[in-house]
Image (tube, rainbow, N blue to C red; front, side, top):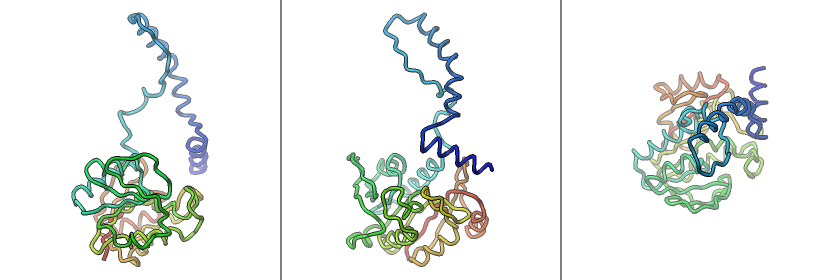
Length: 258
């Protein structure tokens, strides 16, 4: 029952813009706003317009509990430490991970959706990774795909609907990577299922097996549980076996191309 309510309120908040918690906080903040306005007005003689911001009193200085925050920071730091010759990204957040990497090196980005802004340090290509062109084979020694593979084949971002889209996409990404190159991949993990058309949730052990079929060998594994910091795995096999029975976590896999 709890999961049903959470999905219902997620749909209202994210898809329809109805955030009842924020609305209640903002209504509750009106008396404080009016009191602050009166106190400020008493000591200020210039033009004073009204533009209420009523919920910021309840927020932290920044969001550090979001899984995107931890995965973007973690993988960007790994790339900085490794210093690859050429890094390519597939579908990760432009305003998160890609911006992190572009702050210290060049990055080439492939996404099925357009990006209309020219961004320093970012070379953008609009492309469907389920249909890879030959010039991009073995094109880089470092590759990332963060929180994107789970959407392949679901039609959410304008891609063709294909239940096997993630299989084709992963195979094509493996083809882009040179031998000895490193691939950073993050996806939702837990009890295997598709939540159409939001995303696919992967069994982490099956995903590692599929990666192995594409000459990708697991070299490190970490995960993020909802509202938790990143956990580095000391025993990936055991940890993934437990996580495959969980409802949801974000798995961060590091593979090396054989």
